[in-house]
Length: 159
Image (cartoon, rainbow, N blue to C red; front, side, top):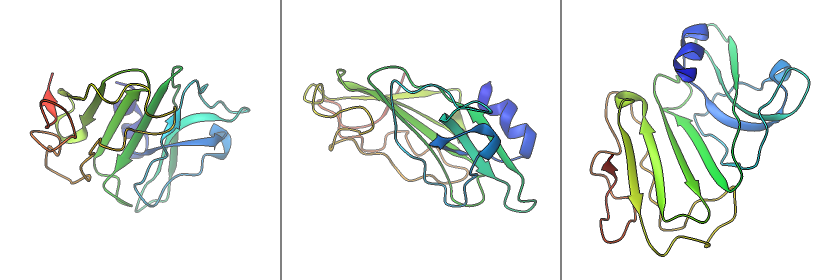
């Protein structure tokens, strides 16, 4: 619901960033989100923190939504580039064996991929090296059956 309300404000999606206030939200023209490291408080009008931000490709309007990240979590949201017509978000806990993802073209489905070798291999702000995150594309569900780096099931699987 949070991302849908924000999308309606400026009519585009956004990416994850940190290190700015909502009042000075940077927007985005690349589609590449920062991997956020938890614990990270949400940005506010006066304090730096996590947020999802984007820039409308025609109007130049910048939107931003606070985004909090829990301890031990790595989280990243990307879009299809400067047009921000769709998105994908991935989250992983550094002590877990499962990563989760959602695709904006099928946002009612949560995907997972599991690998028993992942726990403890990275710190917050990183994903396991074997984790494969497909590129973002408009009008396709990139995670459905895509290679994810899991063991024994190697593909992203609908939950």
